[in-house]
Length: 98
Image 1 (tube, helix red, strand yellow):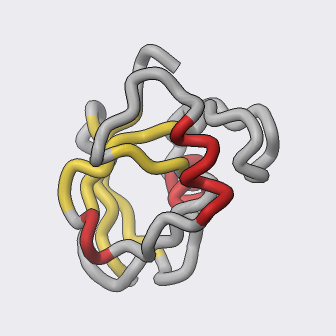
Image 2 (cartoon, helix red, strand yellow):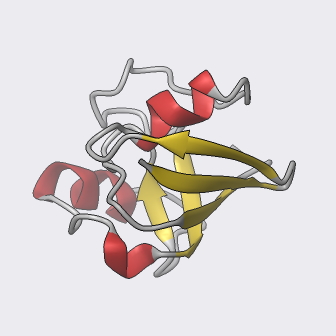
């Protein structure tokens, strides 16, 4: 289990390693768009990983291709549906413009 901090609410939850960030965010009671049900087709679950990026698994091809097509992407960008929690604390920011 690792600690996930969700901004801007500041909510923190324990998340099992290997769980998707999307699942963890929803289990924490936060609202996040996810129109394609976790298939990396819509990009609506775009988040910023503010801390702990290097502890997360690398971006895979499908996620990278979708991020390349989105507006507002930065080096902190990930798709919550494709990002698996590691074993170290992570802080994410839910985006209000999505």
